[in-house]
Image 1 (spheres, rainbow, N blue to C red):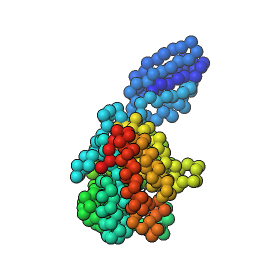
Image 2 (tube, helix red, strand yellow):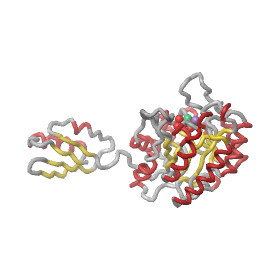
Image 3 (cartoon, protein in one colour):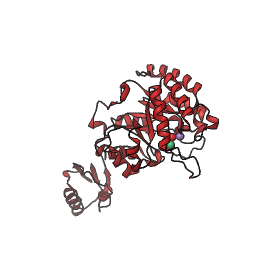
Image 4 (cartoon, rainbow, N blue to C red):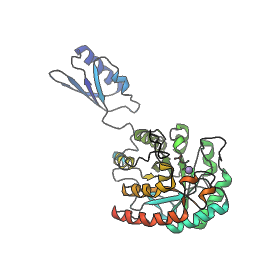
Length: 339
Ligand code: PEP
Ligand code: MN
């Protein structure tokens, strides 16, 4: 960290800042210029808050150089993380992994049909919600454990893995036998109690970016899970809330390369929630792969008009099949592959 003192800061003020920094655990390297003093502070304590220095008399600017997250940072594993899943699925390697399925698990027939078709098109993971975080308490809330049973059966028959949302720490043990990846939804990205609980499970976590979360906040949420011992975290850009109303959310594609530089964790894109409109999903899925996404989360439904949730952004199965063909071409162009 660098502390730039104001022009004209008194020697007494500078000494006070140095004393405070030393008491916080920093080593100080002082550089005294003609008009300004700059303090290099080495060894940022884990719980350091830059505002505690910013408010001291005579301080002009505080510039943090290291990131507040450590385990999630690229420096922790420069070569990148590959998450090994059953069936030889590897997330974070050369292959772009596609997770596809309905927003909500509705019936055994619905999830069975979708699973079979998306698997045939090249998806590796079946996505689907059994616990749904809906904006209205009167909307369909999901079938709970019954939905997970339906999903596991459908996935096993189709040779897919299962990714489903956990909304509360109390659901973790019950969900373990049914799922391969725990999804943490955008609304729970900062549910630190849930994140901590997922730190001690042995299955990977797909962590979605919150509606108004910065990239740093997303990485700090990943750090919560990793600090508990679970290093298998997949990050997911799913659109953020901006002033724009033409799409449901603003799909922040730039977050993909930005995060890949900052972190070693695999990075997915979710163009379905990212746009909220069916015909916008394929172009944004293509763009996410072109931008270097390690995987995609795509909502697909056999009968979107009658879907119990997110029908308007769910692809028809045929649209998904066509999209997979396009994604294969784009993947090749950026040195990746899709099964
Ligand atoms: C979902 O994936 O169905 C979902 C609810 O996503 P998000 O948490 O990103 O809104
Ligand atoms: Mn959805």
